[in-house]
Amino acid sequence: MVARRDWTRLWWSQCRKNYEVVSSEAVLLELMGGDFPGQDEALELVNQLPLLAIEEPIMEIVEAYIKHRLMPSDPLGDALHLAITSHHGCDFLLTWNCKHIANANKFAHIRRVNAILGIYCPSLVTPLELLEIIE
Figure (tube, rainbow, N blue to C red):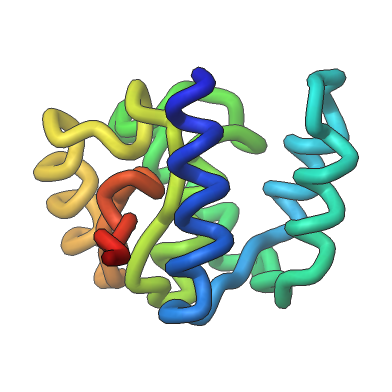
C-alpha cells in the first residue's frame, strides 16, 4: 500500500500535467463514504477536477456490465466507474482496483461487451503504468 501511495503521488506531482484529468461524482461519493487516512487530501484533489456527468445512458451500461458479469452487482461501484469512462470516451481509467478493473484477465471481456454496446473502451491502468521515468 505504501508503494502504491508513493507511485500515485509521484504520478500526480510529475506526470499528471501530461493528461487531461477528470473525475466523476461517483468517485467523490466513494471517497466520502469511507473513513481512511488521507481522506480529506484525496477529496481536495478530486474536488479540483472537472466532473464527468452521470447521464441516463450510463445506468444502462452499468446494467449491461452486471448482466454480462463484468463487474460485481453493486450498481454504484466498479461498473459505474467503467461505464462513466466508457460513455465519455476517456482514454484511460486510472485505478488501483486490480481485481475488477485494471485486470488483464478481464480486459478482453470488457472490450467485447463495450463493442457489443457500441461504446469506446478505455485503457484500464494503474498510476504505475503511466508513470514516466524522469531523469
